[in-house]
Image (cartoon, rainbow, N blue to C red; front, side, top):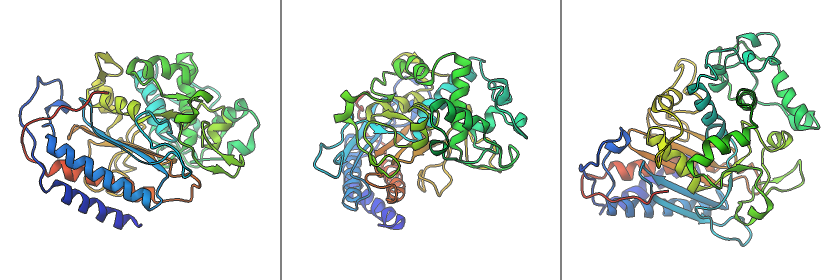
Length: 409
């Protein structure tokens, strides 16, 4: 099914499921911030949204967009709707649920590395406009003295997007060194080129500044405090029954399950700033709720509201729609056609995505293993757009009524 057809599916599902929906309420709880000031969806609206999401994801699975998917839609208080479609694998296997572990792929960049960079810049340990060489003196070569941390976070450093570290090196130490040694393609600030290499280097900056390995830092300072108890690099074999398999990898000559799909992350030992994290719908919802609550969740502060504003604001609109680590809606990406700034989000190659809209007090999470059994399956693009548009249409067409409390996560 084409992207245009998926958009039509979203419109029809939203229209059909909202015809009898009740409306929103203007009643407000004590005002803890902009997110909480948004009216809460009614019971009928939530039911309509649930039916719409289920219909869309079931149709996507029937269209072979993925073996399995788990969607979570919610606000600052908790989950409004969640639904698991299909199964963990094309072979007979369980239906995905809130505890299914998915390979996050490039969501690692925002769930992990960017979270760490927010904390370190807020603490004054990293300066966005400082040269990367201040933190990694070995980051040397023509023009590299001009590359700043901000350049890396906005994918405007001049680094190429990718190189096959997994083919060029034989150990994680060699792979890390080669990423840092990679020459620039252009001067920094000239253009935006989405770069895994930049995120790999930022992960090393986190380690150098904090004195902790990246996985250890994130567990201690982000995932542990947020109650993201299933989020981790290199999950143990005891977790295999909960993990959604990904591709049959031509390089490793086996189907990948429980080890990172990204070959370069695998060559880096499974822990990197650009890929490697595994997480669940339950855990990612907690992260997005923290953003909508101005940096806190359940009384624990992870970052400041000002850091969130800084990292989710477009840095140079003449260059790209990139914020710091995060992406923003541009009318053609996975945010769909209705989300606008200050919304922010990101995608992952394996079929994962996050979008957060503070102006609507809304998050939309979609976790899939669309690369199972092959990365050539590109149907996920249309599904992401259709889901974002559907959710916004259902919620925006509702009018004020009695509130319904979401379930906390």
